[in-house]
Length: 335
Image (cartoon, rainbow, N blue to C red; front, side, top):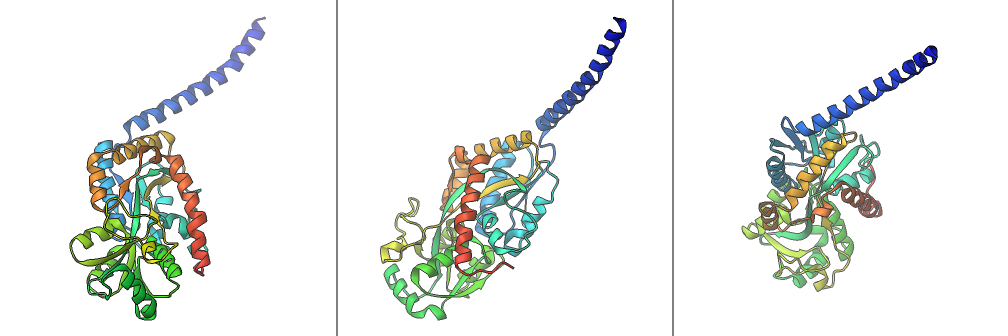
């Protein structure tokens, strides 16, 4: 009898030890999550400073800083259609302290590069969507055409002589430009840049003719009189820009593109940290100050139900299917 009891005791002890270890590990994770963040967070925007993505990222960095009670530093490791900065985040320690803010290029780079050093779906933990923003077709000041109808006639006749800037192959402005040329049935002289900021600077300086890009970067320059607005690249007029025509009003159909920025963490970031970051993102999209800053750029904050991992994951998969397919159709060859 005593031997049996001893055997029971001996068999129970390892179980108790394992439960103690598991319990301590769970407690430690909870304690760490409660302390998170205990040091500054780096928010990577993998495009050049001064562009629309950079402006949006800095709005969210400020809001996250307020909500998380910790400094959030924006880093811009630009180049290679955003893959340099994105790869850096993918290789980062999955602890919630290095994050990625990115738009459609996260999806389209799968079609752009043969040996992409990361997988956009498998190597990241989605946190949530942040914005929904339409695109605008804009021109340098002095570009011939007093209205949209005249512009369509002119660009169809002069297409080979017209330069179309974009932020790099696979970028939002490149995709919008492809849609635009397909709809018009023309081929412009494409001028790629390393980010929208330099492209907008050259457009404002009169060195290139056209650009199709996000309202976040174009609207301030339109309001400042530095570039000319042509039309919205959307199915309907934009509520915040009611006087801006859409291309279909001049008989140009098939141009409808909307760009959403979302935030990601490296794969393996613990769920408590993801949950805390998601809560901060949801607080940001409902913050009146954030919404006002975004609206001044012609961009909308998404509803809080879209600022969560499941919504961003679904959005990414749709963009991979639809916009990645557009690049393939356009004959873009993976590098």
